[in-house]
Image 1 (cartoon, rainbow, N blue to C red):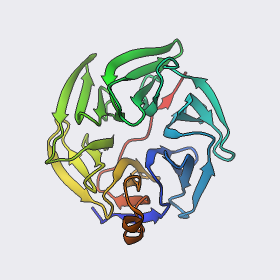
Image 2: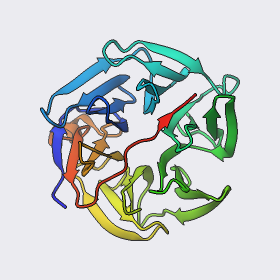
Image 3: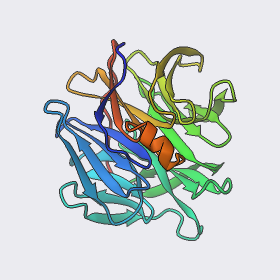
Length: 282
């Protein structure tokens, strides 16, 4: 693989929510703390930024091509050109301090959505599965619901809870802990899976993305010129570019000045392509 190159020096506070949009030929991502939706055209290199009315954290597509968005106000639909958000549902209106964080559409059209305690104050989050009949709780007691991805055949769901550093696996209707992260690996954040089943996990406090086997063994490493690495996603027409978001949220002004690419969007050309995103049908 090539070395990562910065394709948008956006200086995001917390870049996240990467999503390849095949219909528009565009990569979408968000700045959580900056309350903004970013776009990147891999053909022209053009970048866009749209201010949003509230904190946002993740994106998905529905089967009409609409852009679903996880927000501090709940699950919604966003109009990319204007930033207008239509809120559809809040699964936890009674839990003060909780918000949606990560989400992913499933092979069957369901939408899996995780919540978290703002500021990671406690295990008050949960993982939900939305379909046309509404949400169903699939796991409770999470702190930062993060990193959702499917295996190539759609039979396995990978899910990260970042604070305890656990990579969960759901297979045949049951959960098990696939890997526990520690000081030797760093804190896991977002992840994606390539067409051969390798997991690519963003390590948010070590400036890297780790490649892992389907059983959680480290098999590769991509080093970034930024310490805060938050998420990754395959995109481009051939799905052979791994896009990586970074952040600046814990950096001093001096550290930001010394590392002007922090908070940028990076791209790495890969030998194995990724997988196109599924679309939700709600």
